[in-house]
Image (tube, rainbow, N blue to C red; front, side, top):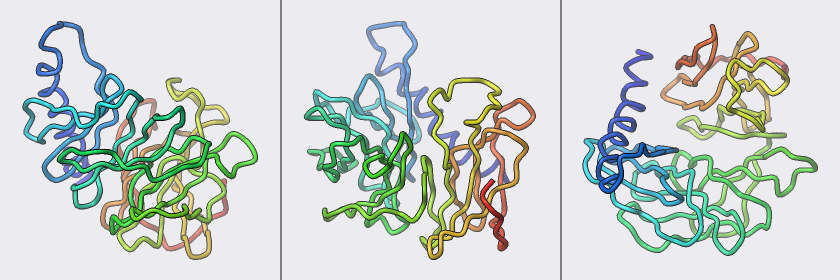
Length: 251
């Protein structure tokens, strides 16, 4: 089941990026650094050369979704796939924007002078999940949601958070609480190793996913399980965990 779920999520994204590469590199033989893919039922959106590009899941010629003078990255499809939330660096600041997946003018959702980075969507697609240090007393991020209709962001009741995924009912959040300033370290086992925690948003109760000093990241809630990447046993692979009913102290 684990492999089937992961190939359904990651396989089309990787295949579509590879299929789109020749179209993007028509005038050069150099390899392309295609990053941050997000998958909907029919399309893949990704970041390349500071812009967002979109292509069908079956591959083909990718088209540019954004072309602003600033840098766009970290795209996330809305649950229905009609919108793409992304991190944009316009007007000298990093904020959360949203654009229609068919193209159009991006719309700004956050306005704080601190950097705001997209992290996903709420289950119903009515708000965008993002991380920011705007109210932190030191260099760590917290989670907020901002409605598509505009307005003030709402802070989630978590001390710190980086990557996250809501359960289908929106009552729980699987997330990574630790910022890594140098995530490229292989087999890192220092104080910045990343766990996956599951939070009950009603009372901020925390359930720690069992691990042995491993780096766990990119949690995705599917049904009653949370899937995540892990470098356990010295190799990166995807692992599932069943949503537990008991809670353990933060560790």
